Image 1 (cartoon, rainbow, N blue to C red):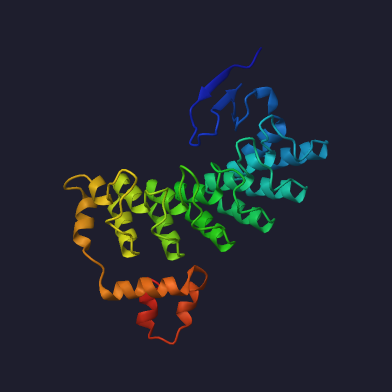
Image 2: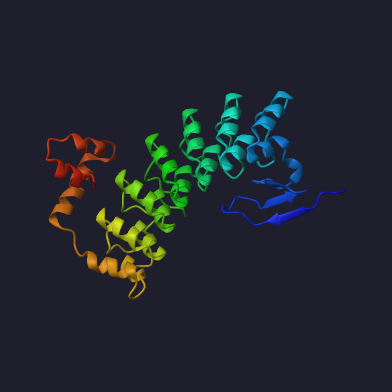
Amino acid sequence: MAATQTEVSLCSQPWQKPLYIYGGLACNSLMADFWSDRTPLHEAAYQGRLLYLRSLIAQGSHVDTLTMDGVSALHEACLGDHYACAKFLLDNGANVEAVSTDGATPLFNSCSSGSSTCVRLLLQHSASIHTPYQLASSIHEAAKKGHRECLELLLSYGAHIDMELPVVGTPLYSACMAQAADCVRVLLYSGADVRIGCGQDSPLHAAVRGGGANVVDLLLDFGADGCCRNSEGKTPLDLSSPNSAVRVAMQNKGPCSLSQLCRFCIRQSLGRSRLHRASGLFLPHSIKDFLLYQ
C-alpha cells in the first residue's frame, strides 16, 4: 500500500518546509523539495535515534550525505536538539560548516531550536560564528527567538554584537522586534550599541512598535535616543499608541541625569571589549555596580 502524505504547518522559519507524515512517521523536510531526497540518516538524526544512526553509519552511510538542498544529518540533529546524535556525527567526521542552499548551518539550526548544548558542542568543534548568508545569521536567530543561553555562548566566542544586515538589522534590533527582553538585556549589558538598528530605524523604534514597555525602559536606561527619527521622519514616541504603556514609559522617563550621562561616557570610553574591567577599577563598589548596571 502506498504511503499517504499529510502536511502539517509547523514552520517557524521562512526557509523551513512543512512537517510531513508518511505512514505515521513524522519528519521535518527541512528545505527538501522531494521526499525521495531525504535518507534514513536524516530521519534518524532529526528524531534523535542514536542507535539507528550508529547502525546506518556502520553499514556504510556517509556521514555527510546531503539532500538536494544541502541539508546534512548534522543540520537535522541540531534542529531537533539532539546533542548525542550531533556529537556522534561530529566524532565521525561530519562537516561542522555544512551550508544549505538557503545559508543555514548546523549552528544556525541550533540557535533556531534553542539548543545551547548543541551550540556549545559546535563552537567547541570550531564552528564559524560569522554568517555565510545574510538571512541565516546565528546571532540574529538566537536574539530573535529569545534563546538567551545560545546568545551568551555566541558572544563569549566573539560573535559580532553590532552586525547589521540588510532588512534584518542588528541582533539588538531583532531582539527588540521580537520583544525578547532577556536577549535585549544580554546584548545591552554586553555593550551593544543602542543607536544601531536597521538603517535609520533604531532599536527603540522596533521596541515601541512591539508594544513592550519593559524593553523600552531597558533601551532608555542604556541611553536610547527618544528623539531620533527614522526614514519616515518619525520618532519612537510618534509610533506609540495614545495612552499605551509604552507612551507612558517614554513620557515618564524624562531627560538623562548627570550621573547617567557620566555612566554612558565612561562605558563608551572603556569600549565593549574592556567593560568587564570596570569591576577592577579602584572605585567604591557602589560606583562599579552603577557602571555595570548591577
